[in-house]
Image 1: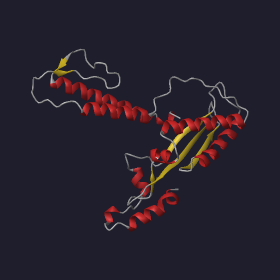
Image 2 (image 1 turned 90 degrees about the vertical axis):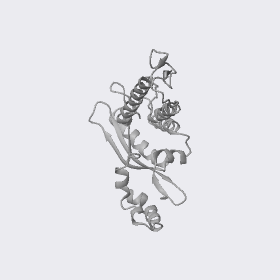
Image 3 (image 1 turned 120 degrees about the vertical axis):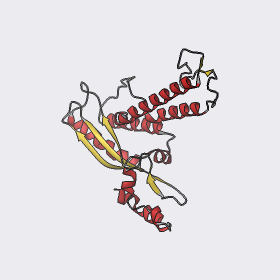
Length: 236
């Protein structure tokens, strides 16, 4: 699928490169070894729970229709796999796709990009696209005579894209803290940029205490982001 989606744009990009080290030899390997992108995206589609769900045949029909409508409705999300599991307590479908987006200028014209693909398809952000997918699934359920009931799940993990914005905010708050060099100078205690609550019970801190607390706070943010990434497939 990588050859089908990207070979032409890679060939055009390489034709404009005068240096061999700038040419793309294997785009799949580049993405595989990238910290910024995944080679493909995966999500799980499930109707109902262990106690309440349609029978296997209706579930298969719903998931089949979902896969077809997904590709029609979101052309920049190339479906590469849809696997229905009927041997577990709740029938569900593992769904895989490659998001691609277009670029102008001297860049490779077609590249992997989930966020850019979402925006180029007319959605403001991931949340808006997710809501559209949910509505599409509801419509398919109705077509198959299944009533949709909102379970008001308040335990859903926070969306990774929302949290990234919070991390950016926290990072900006930290970067904006004034740098003080005097060894015993008292400075105000740091605040949580999300809640604006004190991170300590003190009114002032030494530089060493301040830096130690902020480093611990940044570490906790990073740990939380990593935990969200590890559980990202459960978000859908």
